[in-house]
Structures are given as structure tokens and as C-alpha cells.
Image 1 (cartoon, helix red, strand yellow):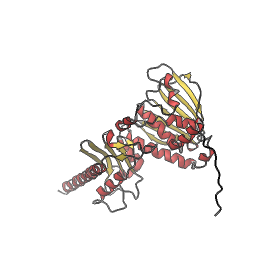
Image 2 (tube, helix red, strand yellow):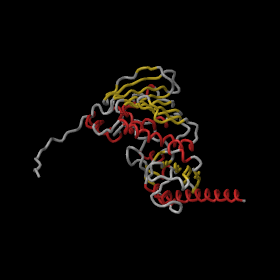
Image 3 (cartoon, one colour):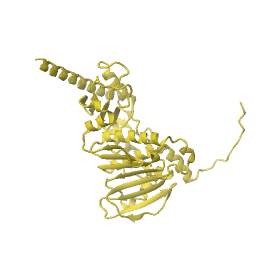
Length: 349
């Protein structure tokens, strides 16, 4: 093995634009990260319709349009600055969090690694404003005629960090990641109208009629029609609701399972294990139901400040969460099985 050569560069402070590009890498790794940050901003702004448009899987263009309450023209440039947010004022606020976003890093991080255009009109204003940023450099805002809401367009993702471009996957793969993301939010917010297009082709569409059962059936398969069991269970201050497939309808992986905490799509082993254990008396190991399960917890009972993506959470009382799910799911499936038997007996009588 070749011996490493001794080499020393003087310690020096990184230029601000390099700091921004490095920090942006924690938030933005690929197109799906951009879309996640933007749709969470849209939902926090009260949007009832969200459209996501991709070109080349998001590598060439990502556009997210919403009809939320918008950003005041006087604050538009602040939205592109790092650590500027209207959602928290201190670290303590994170543990009382009710919004999806909170870091104040999304738009600044996206603007550091793409050619970004932000257009918005606040509900209290008659005209909107438009501002551009490229590689972290922000241009002055200009008046712009538009409907109420916000449109964010990110072009040429990682144009200034070509090394990161090499790690992006094919158009189909990147588009698939975005579609999977939007599927989870369509379940979490069935009252919102969703549309995802890729190079002009519709990839995912949800009507926003509030029918979570219809959304789950569209996403997880038509074989779920008539096979979904409603779950409703409370152990104050914790609550569980949602849908799970009857034991005879299952998959061989978790690809049709969605979990939410306070409507935030999350991943946590406690949730997986709880559902597996609840199903143990109904199905053999290695078979997984389709489900969309929603946990309602006091904000101080969860920690979402683990990773910039905010999909991983920690629970203050994991055993209580485990018990809530196992008990709630077992009761729901048990009651459904009992009702089915009663119907069969009635048919034979």
C-alpha cells in the first residue's frame, strides 16, 4: 500500500457561497427532496390544490404551484435567505410544532444548487412579485401579475455542483421517487387536489374530494376495494385512525404501507413492529397488509428534528405508541371478522 504523503493546507474560513452549497447538500440530495420541501411549504400555506411538474425527472425542471395564501411582496427576498422562517422563533418551538416545515432552509438551499424563480401573491395584495436566485445570488424582486398563491421553479438542479449530478439516477427512477412521495401526501391530505406530471404526462392525480379510502385503493390496488377495515382507537392523549386491509389481502413487502404522525409521513421501526405483531394472529410471517395509519400525538411527544428530511421521528414514549397500534389494529380486525361471521350465519339461516 502506498504511503500517504504528508500535506498541509493553512486553516481558512470557507467563503459564504461555499458554505451555502455544502449546507444545501444536507437538505437537497435529489429532485424528490426539492419537491418535498416545496409541497410542505404549500400545505403550511393552506393550499387546496398543488401541481408538481417535472422535466427529465426533475433534473432539468421542477415546478410546484399552489393556491395557498402566498408570501407578501415585501418578504419575498427574505424567503430565499437561510434560517428565515415564519414557523418557529426558537428551538423550543420545534417541540410544539404543528407545521410541516420549520428550518427556514428550503428555498435558500434549493436556490444555492439550482436556477430558482419564486413567484407569489399574498391573499391581502392585488399584485404579486417575482424574484430569481442562481447559485445563491439573489436578484431584486419585481412586480408580477398572478393569481393568489405561489409558484416555485427550480431549473438545472446541481448545475454548479456537477459531482452531485453524477449521483442522480435515470429520469424514470427520479420521477418514481417523486410519485411515491406525492402518494403519501395525497393520503395525508385527501382534501387537497394533487397533480404530478412528467414531461407533460400525468403520473399521479387525486381529486381532493376527501375520500381517503378511494385514494388508498387507487394507490395500493383495486383488490383492496371492499377489503379495507377502518381503524379508530384512542388512549388519551394518543389517537389512532386509518385503514388497513383485511388479513386475506396482503403483500410480500411493506410497499403498500403508509404511516403518519400528526399528518406527517414518517418512518419508524416501532410502527412497523407494532403492525407486524398485531397481525401475527391473523397472517403468517412475511405477509404485510396494505394500510394508511394516522397517529395523533401531542407535539411534545415526538421529535422530528433528527434529519433535515424530517421523515424519521423519535417518540418520547415508544411503548405507549406500540401498545396503541397493536391494540387498535387487533380490535379493528377482530370486530371485522366477527361481523363477517355474523353476516355468514345470517345468510345460512
